[in-house]
Image (cartoon, rainbow over all chains, first blue to last red):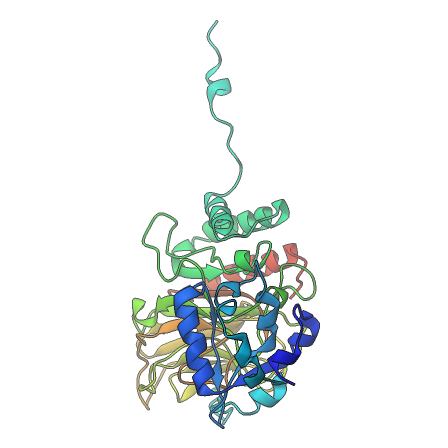
Length: 109
Length: 282
């Protein structure tokens, strides 16, 4: 499934467990649009996964319509590229994040 | 007969001035504040004042008010309302958090992380000296906590001695303060609040729910230093650690100067009373 397959609005209860996954080029375009048209108080912040792709929590889609936190930027995105944005379970995306704190016995009891 | 001066005196609003200022800031940011919440915030401010610890706080957010725009407005941004203000006017929302992530009251009260979103306070770590600073987090204990995730943190990308955070331990097994990259002070109970602080160049203390005091008085692998990067909430340093952002529901955070044992307990009592007033019972 891709973003192009979704009809907005989407329910938060569904979107909260999903991720929007895309390549570096789209991540760069997102940053460009945010810089030009976005609200600096609310920043889409894609995370880079180990495979080089990026993801955003899909619940951002609950804020993409008029009145939403990120409507200003979202409305400027090229909808023709929504086919390039995969919708995957958020847990799968999180599993591909690099770097975790290791609870390695640094406790000081 | 002249009018009594008492009749000419303006009626006091009865609202603590810092609570009133916060409400004004919330409205300016697009949110609102109920009378119940305002009363609870005012009570919190009064308790902090009466404990004599207001100047310990450079930044504090109770995550309260109606709507996400309200909860991103910190109550305190400096040691006093009229003194220097630090950090961003609102906690910069990276992710971003959406309206569905926030509930002001009830068993699910607080701002819910998802291991990806975080807040940037805009408050630089070097605002404080390495030997006099605190951070704290109050989280909703009704939910399962994933282990080894940062509630609040500050570090840079190069120094192992600048690392300072509070994070969850093993799943639902308490929390830990990370002191440089090499040491920690942990609390193993199912707590809901941790305050960690440096009280000297090589002295650190941590409290869980206002008590359970733990100390460290030596850092042989390197003394703590302050980082020039910002303090983050729900994360340690988002540009360095991608996988340590918490999925906890956080109810309050604070950053500032160190406190005495009595101060820390007074702070916990005030912040816990606030959560109770908002029926979070976190």
